[in-house]
Amino acid sequence: MQPNGSNVFALSGADRAACHRAIRTGSKSFYAASLLLPARIRLPARALYAFCRSTDDLVDEAGAKTGHTRRATDVLRERLDAIYRGTPGDQICDRAFAAVVAAHRIPRALPEALIEGFEWDEEARVYHTLDNLGGYAARVASTVGVMMSVIMGVRDRHVLARAADLGLAMQYTNIARDVGEDARNGRLYLPRVWLAEEGVDAEALLRDPAPSPALARVVERLLAAADTHYALAMTGISGLPLDCRAAIGSAALIYRDIGRVIALNGHDSVTTRAVTSRQAKIRLLMAAGAIPFRRLAVAEDAPAPATRFLVEASALPDRPAEIKGFDAKLGRVLELLAATEQRERAVTATARGRS
Image (cartoon, rainbow, N blue to C red; front, side, top):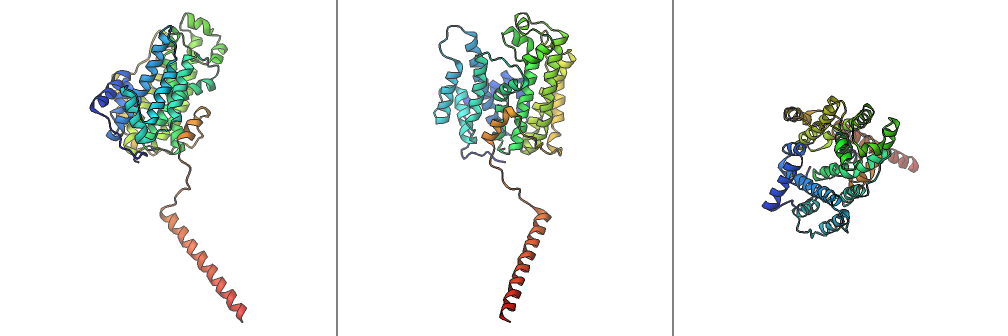
């Protein structure tokens, strides 16, 4: 599959180096996975990461400051307007993302949804149920998975739905890993209904983060939800270009392994932050090498409700399946036989009419 844009993706040497630095310093897991991407995808993927990282950092920095008059997401929307006009600002990440947008025709609804997710952070939105949390995860994580698929030239709705599943799974894993860190920063993403069912006081947890068996059960429950989406997402890798499958598979495996480490820590994400060891990453990268050759049908489950709008914004209209091989030849023979029989009947009817 080739990129579905008419322009060629290109960056200056300085912008290219900046994108490489952004992913190398921002996420060791994504950097390791990106090394497996083919060259035509690796640079636009890193440019996408640089833009997403910079927007996240801007929101975090604005939240840490007092007295600022403008919301970070208002600034981001102005920057996005300029990007889609083809006149990005001076930021390296904006220039890089504008090149991605032009070359691969990224639907604007995707980065807009990403910014909306950051806006929810600015509003300190509370998530009462897993469905509520799914709406947030769809915006801050599934958007990235769907944009990556579009960069790879994928517009099949089932594959896009599975990419969105991977985004949900990864974000749930992030939340399960960062309970303590988030609470110390005044944030709590765990579903409030789940906490109440376990007798965990959300406000007390924010004031004084402390591990407990009850809190551990909530973390375990969220990881179980993530696993459901990982299982669906892994089938979608079969719908990606062959030379992209190992990279995306390795990212999924490495992130899913974080859940395993959290479990080994007794689901205590308050006093301990789970990380995947270097040895484990190497092992998972090697395992990912076999992924392109596995025969696994893409699950045709409907998109998760929270991600449906992302899939609809990005998918091409469904086309009737093309019949190939023996079935196609047999179908053509039957068509010819039917047409011949129809002509013979017409000739016979005409002859009878003349007699």
